[in-house]
Length: 387
Image (cartoon, rainbow, N blue to C red; front, top):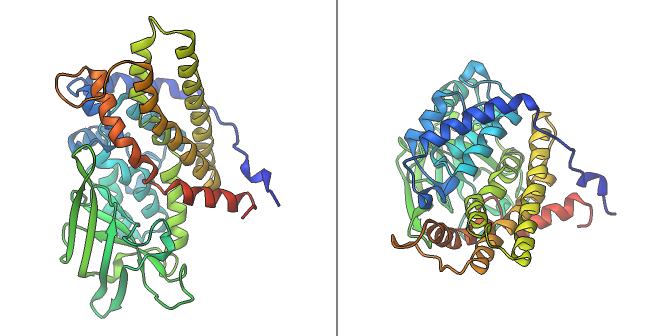
């Protein structure tokens, strides 16, 4: 039976009291991003600049919702939303701190030991620690529960063998939160998974292998574990509860403004290109995309509000990710259709051409990060009671 009640997106509006924060962030970004070209800024949350991340941390704009006793700021998810929205819209290079601030910090705060919290969270809030996510594996497709990389308990710690893939920034990261199999018995597909906090800089037997994408950049990785030994206290949360923890973590990953703002700089520049001479037909097409963006923002805000109130937004987050991906992957084709300029990455092209060229190549990967659309639609179907 269709469970339509589960489909509701509670209406949330950012309070007017947050407008001073928004103005402060915009003023900071206008100055801080002046040296960055339009091409660099079109990488948005893939842009990687540790110095920029430390500047945000120094202003108290990272670890905003994390506990003060660990270096966080105990501010609301809606305040963090303002920071994220403004940095993404401006094309700030947030990649160094992105995963740590978005999900690793909250996961450690929720499931970590006291020692893990004290050791890791302060560095996240200062913008000094880079995290990656160890979930996907070769030959597993999008069936996350089929991961086979093993963590075997030994007298000296946990011995890890296996391979992770599509691991963003693994070759640069300080830590990985990895979903590993601790029980391989046939009836333990979900119950046999556990999460681990892995120190990538100081653990032998871990080899990141960068994967070049269409743009020539290397940010994805294959990560090979060969008899990598980590301490017993690297277990994050409880053994056997990794599936529950990882699926809760994905709500942070699937619902934020990055799900509709990765191509915002292109939409903005498209409007600049056509605003003085656009035909009614062109204006109609652009208006439809702006309406999509506005709707996605309202849906994403609803999820942020649910997180702020401690409500599980798993279904809603999956819907935002699905629709946001469709929106973002459609924009580069529309931008080329409406403006008679070819996309390029050469220095001879205009800013618009370079942004278009970069995002035309990046957009196909948007349906990979955070879960493929097929998997998301299965989650949505189950949430609605039709599967």
